[in-house]
Amino acid sequence: MASCARILHPTARSLPNCLIPLCRSFSLTFPSAVAKPLPYLLRQHQKVINLDSKKLDFRAKASMAGVSTKKSRGKVQVFDSEEELAVSLAKYVADLSDKVGKERNAFTVVISGGSLSIWHVFWVDERVVPKNNPESNYFLAYNDFLSKIPIPSGHVYAINDALSAEGAADDYETCIKHLVKSGTIGLSEASGFPKFDLMLLGMGPDGHVASLFPGHPLAQESEKWVTFIEDSPKPPPERITFTFPVINSSAHLALVVAGSGKADVVHTVLGDGKKHDTLPVQLVLPEGGLTWFLDKGAASKI
Ligand SMILES: O=C(O)[C@H](O)[C@@H](O)[C@H](O)[C@H](O)COP(=O)(O)O
Image (tube, rainbow, N blue to C red):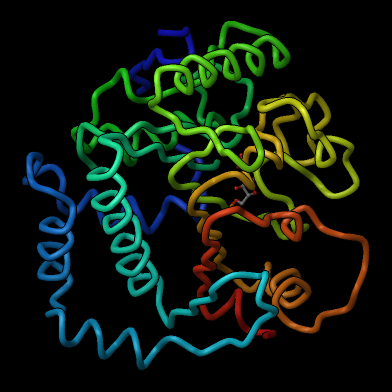
């Protein structure tokens, strides 16, 4: 196993939006029901928040605004509350885990800045800082999510924090190549890049995704699987990141965006917002399905 598969146990910055719903949903249920499959846990979670499935269906329908969008922009779901977004996102992940797990006996999940033994967790980007540094994406995900679920430690692929940004990116790419070779991660026939089962991506208010920022040449990388940045406009400056060819080879991709601070970019991408230079988020065009999970604030201008 390559060195990127090591896991440490760190001893909190706030969670990225894409993880908050998952942590909320899963952490309520995993500690007490570790061996149960996700759909069971989700039913339990619905009980915890006092919603039976009929009410849940009704609430989901009542609160989800239909948003018409250009076909290529994917499916858009808007939720009145974070709780509803959380339940829906957790169900989306659980259903995929169930389906893909039956087909491949592995489920490769990529997260940005529950569980069954089939889960393999990766980071779409990571800050090059020690794993016990609160700036580390691993640190956040471990403390609030991964430490609370029964996932084998060898299935959590953190970066090697002893290396430089360039070294850590190369090491992560090598690790992914091993996992493609062993069949844990699929390979896209169309692109020749690794095909992860699910990517959960956040988006910054400037339209960045992963560590691919507007106007930065990394957004054009077409050969590498994993690359590095030493001048990230969002601190900390040194990071590694998946490239667009890898992001766009994924089988399923969810963009989880919350907060009115991101409403202008959401308007640009999904509505008829003003045109300007192409934003990184507009380059997210996965082979598989793209689903947007928006709260009311983020969807307020579309
Ligand atoms: O390490 C990071 O900073 C990220 O991976 C970055 O791309 C993040 O996902 C967005 O900035 C949205 O973050 P929030 O959802 O927390 O606003």
